[in-house]
Image (cartoon, rainbow, N blue to C red; front, top):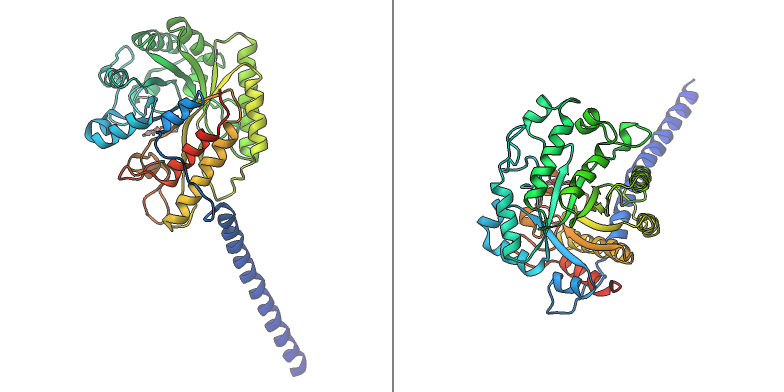
Length: 393
Ligand code: XIL
């Protein structure tokens, strides 16, 4: 008996040891796996040298491209250095808050029949003063809607509300807008509809035709503006992004086939290296080609590169972020239908990601071309190199 016990104990001991080894191997391999993924991303040997002298907007313009950014009246009026950096580097500007129904400290739509244009007018004047091409963002979105919206809007009054919004707001700036994000983020395949449409108050109150209606109303009021459908989650070789690319392509093809006055796709390009996001340039190229084959232009409308999944070491983070900027832009700028690149902010001091996607370790995020002191980072060099190496439009 004792012998069996001894054997059993020995066997249990060996089993325990092997399980411990397996678990720790698993943990180590996962750690290695994650570390390898980071290592694979981190091009600390990679060179981001760039020729001196030209700003981002000048490098973009040399290739027939437009570079721009977003910001708010609040940031621009309180930070002259930031305003100067934007004017120096940007040809295009898109308000982060002031052209939405409500966002931040802006309230364009205080009521069903009411508008407050003060903040939007300030943005339009700022853009005109500094010869910035102005983007309108965004007319129809499920987010940034005032409290009264969900309490008031229904299938009886939604069309009147949408018509009044577009005919009043778009008319006010007609002829001054380079492009409108007419509809934003209307696709969400996880909502389970065959057409992939996101279930929103607009869909619920107006049906699937709300998208075509919004484009037709906008075109009627400002025939000069480029009319854009804008969305995110189109970038990576993941089942979710693949499904979204398919649904967006079907939406765009359907709109074009019914004569909707749509001119471009806006790809937000909120990028996130590390984690399970695999970047597959060939897949992205094919998607851009498919969009362009519909006769549409393409704008990269909200680009930033979150470092939330990257190591705390700033040198490592900045290298990886820069590599993502250059690799992504090298891919998309090969497609000549791409006409503009807008980063969602110019300086880390004002990135929405500080609040929306903070790092787990609490260290400040570093997703944008300039640091919090308006100094150029490797990401600035990476964007500059991508413009310098882009094919001429
Ligand atoms: C964000 C702004 O950056 C935030 O300041 C605001 O509180 C919410 O909206 N996709 C979009 C943008 O189309 O309008 C969003 O901007 C970011 C995600």
